[in-house]
Length: 545
Ligand code: NA7
Image 1 (spheres, helix red, strand yellow):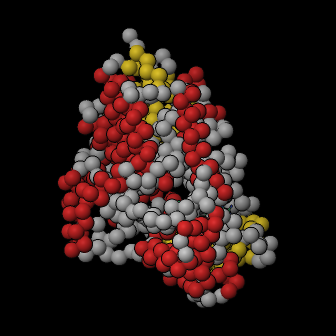
Image 2 (tube, protein in one colour):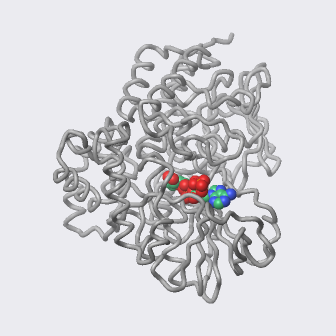
Image 3 (tube, protein in one colour):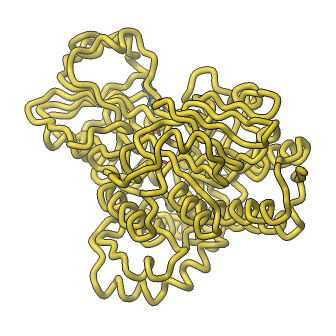
């Protein structure tokens, strides 16, 4: 927990910072560091007691990143990159949190943050061209520019089920997990949700609990995570390869160094296809979702990968009805974020684990003692919600965020999030949203993505400061064109066919639109660089006397 002395609130309310950064995750920490390094007066605000963002909140058992640790780490400082030792190929939550604490300490970032306060309002004051930010502690802070580094998977989704507040036992959400951990020993546990979080937590909870009941609304595709410790020799080799690896990632579609199979699935014969799928399955993780270049755009190509993954489930799960229930029936493989597991399907062979298919027997109510479905009552001691997030837009739309002329973000985004370059919003001058809708975001390695955006934004703020620009705002037409482009590119893929959180489909009433930019991180970076090189085309830059 951060214990650094902070300026008094009274001091704060009167001063105008150059930049406010909201959030102390990967993006926010680097935002503060980069802005401070550029000589800007920067203040960070964070809802948690400490740094970490996603990795602070998601402490559920089994939480692990599905991008390799050596890629899912900062590249901006060679000494940091060289000196930090990742112990596993895919880092678990505690190690990523330790890494972020180390970064905060190394670059003296924690003292620039006010912790344990959640931003509840952000209003643009046209008179002074500044943002006024209010927190749930009653503090107010003012700045010329604001960066929302509030995460795309941070606004927790707890479903509105009849009787949701009636359960008398322990209630947990994977994204609000107690720091002290939870004991499942001797407990009858229920987990609602089978996305990445549920799929990671289930095998571990099953080992400890007396019984585990998994309530599944939609089956998900999941690929084994080939995790293992990294040996000293491997680490040495990786260190030597790092510069070339990073250089490739900076312009790669997902900001990771892997390519798809060199031929399309439909160009090759069955033997070659199976060999390629098997190799990719063994390589493991989310990469299976793009084994072939045509896999996410041509349904027939996707079907090959889908059938291959389904055969794996049949081979792993003993009970035929359970195996059938665990196989998705409603979306192409990869069009919902593919999950990465350690022993998920095998867990359903345990005597103490059962799967409830909510498509066959929907939940009718949560009661004081458990969950009632149309077919049965399940008695529980502990109820775990692994029900995800109001992704990509929720962190902004849930606060009182008003831009110029008092326009609320909920009004401006009512028909889906409109952005320019995924970072800026028309009507919201001097405001930047990191990893937001309209950027590659969740489709890329989020750490390198955060570095790219932060550097671009800080360059823009420095340029405005140097040139007497008081306000920078994207033009309405440039935002419209960008957002249309985001949709057009998505429409060339199979992704819009799934009821995913990418589409906002998991939140009742949310506009159905594919939110991240699927045109590739490298292409996105080039476009951002071009806008900068062209003196910020698409923006209105306003001087003030
Ligand atoms: P996800 O992937 O959004 O998964 C949430 C799960 O919760 C999913 O299986 C949902 O089923 C289920 N859910 C949500 N609401 C309900 C209700 N009302 N009843 C039953 N089941 C429900 O969130 P995660 O936290 O697992 O992962 C989010 C991302 O974090 C992940 O993709 C990685 O990028 C990291 P549904 O599919 O909506 O039918």
